[in-house]
Structures are given as structure tokens and as C-alpha cells.
Image 1 (cartoon, helix red, strand yellow):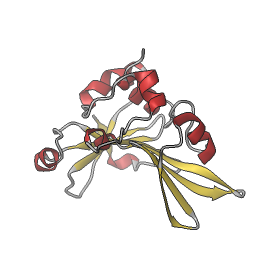
Image 2 (tube, rainbow, N blue to C red):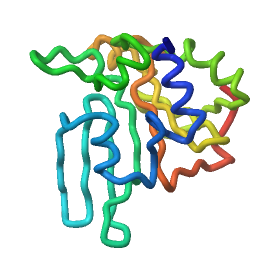
Image 3 (tube, rainbow, N blue to C red):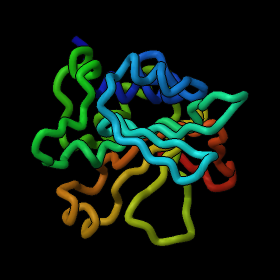
Image 4 (spheres, rainbow, N blue to C red):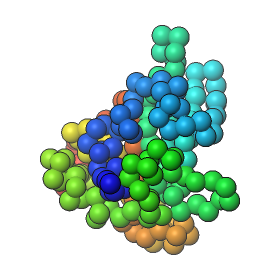
Length: 180
């Protein structure tokens, strides 16, 4: 059985795919793969969001159909303890086993490197609780906890991954990138 680290590395290497689905997929395709337990939000006629536990999806209308525009792994939700709610869809736990409440970026560096992926820091002029990391080969962003107070308030540690996501229009300013 593959592990949760394999899942995160595969997500990063495949430009944000989950069980073969990613940007461009339709809502019904996600339901077929992940089941019918999801929260749905519509902020306007032009937007649709679905959360399958810790997997967040945004859809935009395209040719009279909804098309996935963003896939986000909200890893910070894995530590939430809500009675009757499992943040990991059954299809994922069947394939990858148990998912931990916390995932350190250190656990992901080696698998990403062995896949030929580059992990870069995105320099920010703003103070933030989260640091942005960028994988240029697949345009995947990782938000990592960097503030100790923010971390302790949420049961995390500095260096834990908060989210990993891929947006159809993700870009990074090359002048702001430097090695991890």
C-alpha cells in the first residue's frame, strides 16, 4: 500500500491530481471517485466549491458545464475532531492508508527531489504565519507554517504543511524565488 507521503508527492508531481482527476475535471467525476459526501458552496452563479473532507475544489463555468479550476489539499483539516466526520475520503484511505494530523515539509523534500521536482521559497515582503513554497515544474504551491504562535494555536509545528494546491492559472514571480 502506498503512503500519505506518496499521495502528497504524486499530487505535486501531477499538477494537482487526485486519483487521476485534476484541473479541468467535472463535478460528477469527483463524486464518482470520492463519493457523495461533500459540502457545497455557491458564492455566485459563476462559482461552485466542493469540499470532500480535506480536499477542496473550485469550479468555474465552461461551455455550459462546470470545470475544476483549483484543487487544494487542506492538510490543516486533518487534525479537526468533529464527531461523525472523517476528513479523508474512503477512496483515499483505501489506497493510501491512514493520514496523519500533521505533515512536515521535511517528509516531502526527498520524495519530491527523487521525482526531479524543485522546491523553491517565494520571498514575501509581508509578515505572514505561512510561507509559500513553489514547484515550478508542475505549478504547485505549498503553504507551510512558519509562525510558532500560529502553529501552537492550531496544534501544528513550524515546518508543517498547511495546504498544497494547484490552480489553473498559478504563476510565480521568478524574481521572488530562491532555493529551499
